Length: 266
Image (tube, rainbow, N blue to C red; front, side):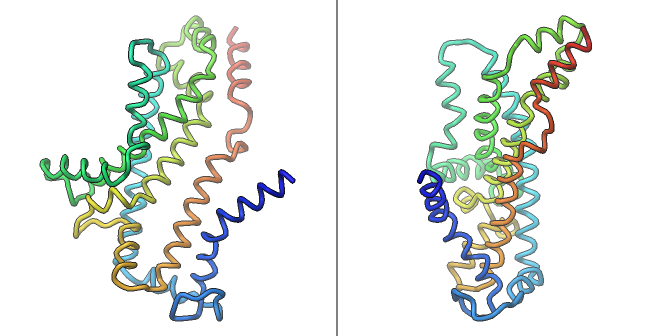
């Protein structure tokens, strides 16, 4: 009964989204389900339109850049928080999580006012800063959870065997928290690629993300091409979530690997 209930809840959440995929292959000129016939006309319309392709390219470049920078900043922030003891530590941790808690429209207004004074609004750099702001908390949360289960004796053993701080971090700490780093990166990528609320305030005429372009298209005309774009986004986000939970990508458990390496050194 528990499995049946779980499957029913999953279907309730996923089916409305998955309906978009067969609609994107519809032969009809209007949004219609079930589709009257099979056609790839809307995918052809998408990839033949330079504005849509340009928006997709901006979103991918933006998501990749935001993921890399967020992963670096979030990882070091999480390590610093986990290894420090000071008054107000919990308050500082919650402050890092604020972009996840504050409504996006408030963040959008605040970021717009901040970047407008620096002439960053309406360009790629301004969008990148806003997306990093939204993505860093996801990295910090996942890495903090992994650091909480990290045995400090592994790092102490590495240091006692002559490794410096950098070698210890790269050969001991990183392999142990690698699943958290990968999950945080996937969440950061999905957050940036799918961001729409904050991007509404920052996007200009020359730089437009794919979600912003979709929103503008829905307001101006109900073009079935949007179903093809939505299907592409769904597939990309789904792949990101699958990869973030694919334990087989990491081979053996990091903890056992580190234990074996330390035993070999001894």
